[in-house]
Length: 377
Image (cartoon, rainbow, N blue to C red; front, side, top):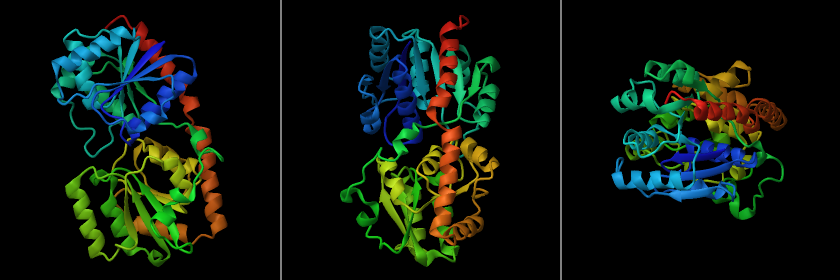
């Protein structure tokens, strides 16, 4: 099988991480795998297996006929059996080329959308082209599957596959943290101070403002510092959060640490993690917290969050509940170091049992085979 993964960028992010995980898993199983970045950012490309060929289009506009033709030429040159398309803006580019009959390979659309209002009515282009040209639709949550059905995708072509990770990245010895990589030293955090992390691009649906309100209400706030690890996705929102942080007197407690790609190396350096999101589809980072053995407090959002919460893993609160998040954070920080380690170990066991990429690859192969054999497209 010859599979082409298509995405706008390989910047640090959840959809981008899932492309790397699935592409690597498919290549490890002996299939020919290719990746195409339609724009320019290739930060995570270094984590692709060496046999995976990377093509970068550097397109500047959403719809560009010359770029579509170059993309179509590439699919023919590589004799692609199917295209695994990640994200809705990437899909619009691929579907436009398909509608112009530039490409013929079946399309598997992988919908990672989890932002606020992600279940809004489908745009016209999706309703016009999606039903006709999407061979198989895969959402990362049941809500996305329902959205696809309401948007005209044939029910038999709709699947829900949870996010999962290559957990070996988090195994003992998988990453070596040198003093130069020490997050605690980099941020000048004293050894006696607990270090928490929040991971994700900073925009409103990530709930950083909720986190700040929660930290301000925490009875344990003098015992910890929290590093916000993530790029600035919404400049106005980031500016508002920085102002809120200063107004609440938290500038020395909550640290904007910026974008990082070495998450697997950073997480073991922390003492706990927080997920304050308003909305998520996964969230993938929750699996990363568990895989790293980090105890956490989290908003109950996304398919992964709901699934883990149903297993009674501590501790989840409703989204946008700053007081509840503060109380959950205090509960965690009152635990002894041994109790926190034990809580993290329970999370590791959950990650291994339910969120190992090797367990989901057979589902992807079923989807791929269905896309290739569907004669109705």
